[in-house]
Image 1 (spheres, rainbow, N blue to C red):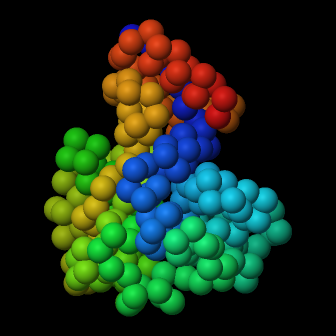
Image 2 (tube, rainbow, N blue to C red):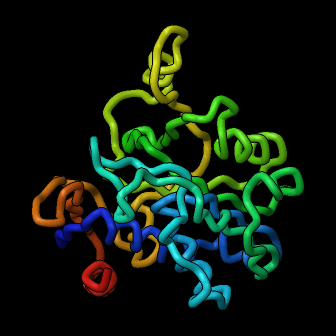
Length: 246
């Protein structure tokens, strides 16, 4: 057994690298449509996947989001709250060709079985392997659009989400309380799909088994997670090289 600590950023990078090697995503890159909906974790996934597709130098994570969570009173480096003025669009790749500027809304109706959507999440129930998304748009935003394709036409929905977003309890029960008439603030929508965390990334890339054993830190390790890995010497060595390089 070996122990490793992953900062939030390193965890996102690890998830991104693993998704670029994910068999379903690799198949979609060559012969179907892959949609990476904008988000901070998905920004890392987009970087790694676009490297595979041959677009390594043409993508930036800088504005690849639709709303981000900041501490109270905090603004971006520009001195203002985040907006979508520089939003580049989601990443839509059709048979290996990046359709720059397109969004999930442009292509959702054309998606079919065999296509893949990556959609980030804001809450993770690790015990049940379930994820949920905060909803601010009255029409449900990109989540509802993705679900129409996933549920209506069997498009594969993958939900990259870091362990720092874990919450206790049942997300369905939590959503029922948060979404009740008379409540205020964001709504919460549990989403059916393939939840993909750092634990899944390590398994896919190294074959080692990982479990979370602690969390937290200071000096840049706020939100970090401690993982205990079990595997062969070769698997643990591969994991060490992969994690230390993040």
